[in-house]
Length: 429
Ligand code: C2O
Ligand code: CU
Ligand code: CU
Image 1 (tube, helix red, strand yellow):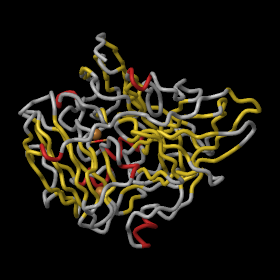
Image 2 (tube, protein in one colour; image 1 turned 90 degrees about the vertical axis):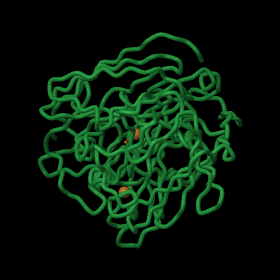
Image 3 (cartoon, rainbow, N blue to C red; image 1 turned 30 degrees about the vertical axis):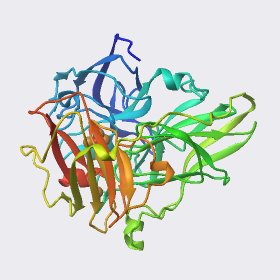
Image 4 (tube, protein in one colour; image 1 turned 180 degrees about the horizontal axis):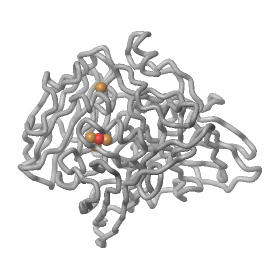
């Protein structure tokens, strides 16, 4: 994939009104609209140039979650876009086909900005994925499923203050900004690009009729082979692509089931982990277009070489700190050498739910408490759930982009925790 060319995207962050639930309209934020933003799409090898104009009355950013790019284009808390200002990052896309996403990252305000509605999918395509027999007609048999939870008052307005230890856990589930969503299925097999874009809630996805789904991709791209799963757990920021098969005339609901996050019962309830929720009704037409079977081999996921590891770092997440440090925009926590492979040993030394996300790279999970990872964690990941007191060894390779003056972030993707300071900064030199 060495094609050139530049694709330009214009995004305008703006305030608007959205009728989401009965009772009235909510004040929401969106990109080029009142709520959420367009799906961006680029091919590996292409250069993308974004023009983001901020029409809000406060500063924000847009971060390209999962993307390998220069730190100055990353859209983290160092790339604030003031009201009325325009920011134009550009980079060459060079990573496997994947379902990535974008969302704001203003330090201390990320939860609120995402909750209000800023965000969207960023799909990367490549020649390898394009040659596979997979559903890929966007909006027809390949659909974005951006899952979020919110709480509304009786006038349909968003409630932004219902916060537990872990942030806001809403009682209304939205898909792509719609409550009570229905998708009219027109093909035998449908690919769902699942994104947990909630600020705090995790989802344990499964089909209401008890059949499994076929998982084909994790955060950073295709798995090596399809995986038949009863449940797909996604914590905030994580993605999975799944293929579901329906018979003509069939209706099935994608649901979220109670999940084991390794928490005590009370904490599990506070985090929404005990909830059973309808997410998306899939309603098949009386006649369905045929779809090929999911290929038995999807991709070659080259294993990063543990014997080549130059540096091992450890990160403990606890009390809204990482290694006992609160995020400080003026402090660089880690200096990484380009073209090296590192192991990051990460654990949650706390009884609250946390996950761990790293900017710029996709990593592989080497081990979970010394054991090989489960198959759903065997592909490329950029965010991983950390049950309390379980050690994760993550391996990652830093390439191409260096900037001694501009850091990338790593953090818990429960956005209230991130806002409270559970975040650190690294530079690649
Ligand atoms: Cu999805 Cu640093 O974020
Ligand atoms: Cu990110
Ligand atoms: Cu956390």
